[in-house]
Image (cartoon, rainbow, N blue to C red):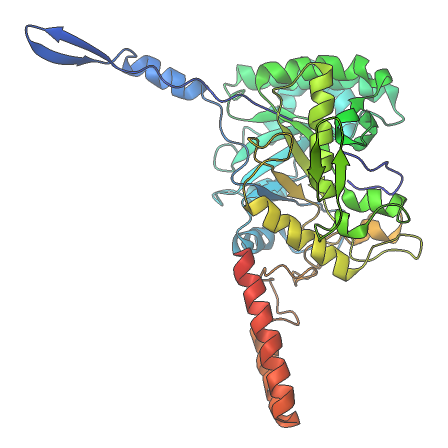
Length: 424
């Protein structure tokens, strides 16, 4: 989750399975016989071993719940369906959420919390207990496609937690394997940008030397399982940390001069792609050039304290609107054009109980009552100022004020309609 103390910089992987063997054609007695090389039993076993897709399309959302005024999870499922958001990530394994997602068809990533990591690392039995409690009673009717182990563990102040991370990952994986779920549920851990020593220009990005003792076994393990490298990438935090030297338009996907990476001769016109490529360069330098980078969190706060530059509704809408358009292009980055960029937006709701500065409580696409907070063309659970009923009222008021007001109203409505169509 975002924290203003972070250094803002950047994100991981998998190789596609080999194509199935072609059928073998044999001639016998002048008649061509089609012999299927893999018998039905082996074919079934192969299908069973095929890795499930943990991310549909390119756009997802983080469903944080550090609040006391949010809609019940059953209503949240309705909201997600209305918004056509299919990929959802939560920060725990709350059973009311797991129950609400039953039969929804939505992809759900659940989490082993930081507070559970040490116990699970210390005991394979604890890992199995965790799965028996939080996965077995719900899967597959609740479409659990992934489990994250910890969140932003590396680079934090708890060295014991960092040491335990790989053990927890391995124990959860082994338990999934015993349950026959290791190829059906993706396992990974999200990192903050604190794992990087530097990230500018992108080609210079490398991991911190002091963290490689923890990162190396993790990356070795994930390179074998085919899991992506998850990073929390926030152009907003980068801009807020140095507004005097970073063009806000570069952070918001708006027209700007961009940056030029002399080593690769690549030009970047937005910070999001530069942050993603920085992670690719760090992975390559560490010996993992084939690993996919996936963004676990990204977003922009719609309100903040006086010292938090750029935190306002206009910038929040611009970033989220332009990022969504960028992701819907289904293209890669300048350095990895063949790797489609994928990201989970932070966050679904404003969370009123999050500690810290004002920005922490204002990342949501929706307000706690289910109405729209950042207008991207989504429908809310309750009408907002852009709802049809309010539009009718505005039309009546404009008509009462005269023809000029009516023309202005019509022009505004037409522009809003165009924006919605672009996003759809």
